[in-house]
Amino acid sequence: MAASVEAVVPEVGKERIYMTKSLNKFIEELKENLGDNLNSVIAFGSQANVEDAKNNLNLMIVLKHLDAENLYSISKPVQKWVKAKNPLPVIMNIDEWYSSFDVYAIEYADIRSNYRMIYGEDLAQNISVNKYFLRLQCESELKALLLKYKNAFLMNIKSDRDMKMLLSNVIKSLLVIFRSVLRLHDSEVPYRAVDIIEFVSRYLSFNKIVMTKLAKVKYENDDYTKQELIFIEAELLKDIQAILKQIDAMKF
Image 1 (spheres, rainbow, N blue to C red):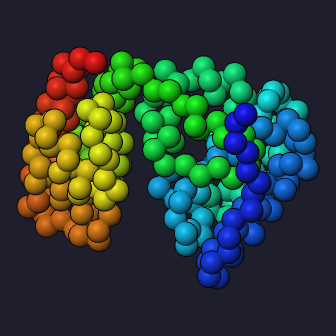
Image 2 (cartoon, rainbow, N blue to C red):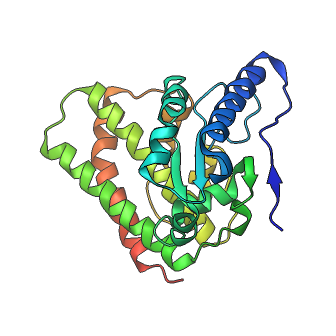
Image 3 (cartoon, rainbow, N blue to C red):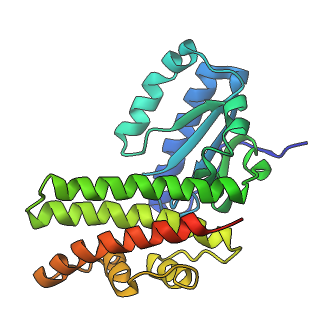
């Protein structure tokens, strides 16, 4: 029998009390509106097991069956949850959960690696990710990223502010792909961005100085000089192309 949990989390410190009360209230509203149709609520992502998380908690809400009436019934609680600076929850039914292991291989691999059951049946323990589909989605996501990056040049981004925002989004997407590459090689996946880059450099060739700089700016309050920004924006295009070629050649 699958494990089940209720939305009861130990309260530790004022910040944790806030999150617990906010989360518990949200779960109670879901249960009130959905009843037995609410199968599972799963926290995932970087904040899933952070003890002092105030907000920005990603939730997966799985229903036994899902129709428009269900969505209408929980729209107000969801809107309040998002207004509290949390991401919009992912909502699906049981059939969608089990039929999406292939097309969402990256996302399911991330959930399996770091999740916390908030309520109901522990579906995450049954996640199965095929390496073929994981590599395929890495390639697909990387091609989409490359297209967006090239389009930014075509649209002639001039300001440093816009370029920094673009680079921030690029490294965030690349780190998702890097974590997946490590899983493809059955490697440990570190938590810190700079460590992920160090580990994945064993399997992919790229400019490690550029990638590390991007990560430090994004996650460690570093900044670019004007010269670094000019160099990185050009070097990164070559790196993304090179990484795509390497991932395309991987066989699993």
